[in-house]
Length: 188
Image 1 (tube, helix red, strand yellow):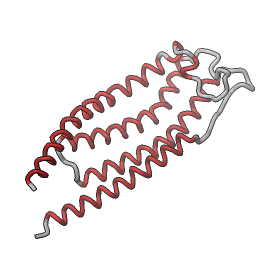
Image 2 (cartoon, one colour; image 1 turned 180 degrees about the vertical axis):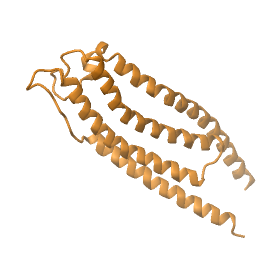
Image 3 (cartoon, helix red, strand yellow; image 1 turned 45 degrees about the vertical axis):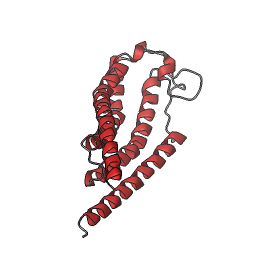
Image 4 (cartoon, helix red, strand yellow; image 1 turned 90 degrees about the vertical axis):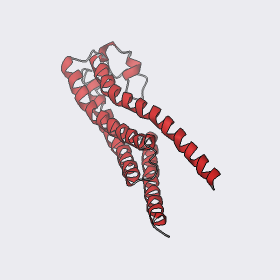
């Protein structure tokens, strides 16, 4: 029994170390995400069109440079997916914060997993809005008849929905495990 306890404690120590690394990486990511979005929209006219092409045809959707006002509108629209992305990374970071403290089954775990599932669901809707809005922004300077509005749901949104559902079930399982562990702790 003491040998098993020693193995578990060794594993917890490893989990703490790895979690500390991920916690720092996720902190950096949370800092870098807004910087990326700012630079992307600030330098959008200097990027290759293949990098910003949002439609499915080989024809470029953007034929002219975006005006500063359209760049600002594009950045404003990008705040929606950026916010959702940061929300998701924030809760992943919080999970690793628990792990680096050696806390593996707490009520916060299920809460953070539920919020992560919520972030995935919000990502689907923000992605649809963002892709639709950018299709208009990138093609608004085109002549009539070649302007584009795209609205759609792809297999990536369906996969994201599936992942959200799996994470939601994991949160449920983690919470039930925590409840059982607490009941066993007080059973004599």
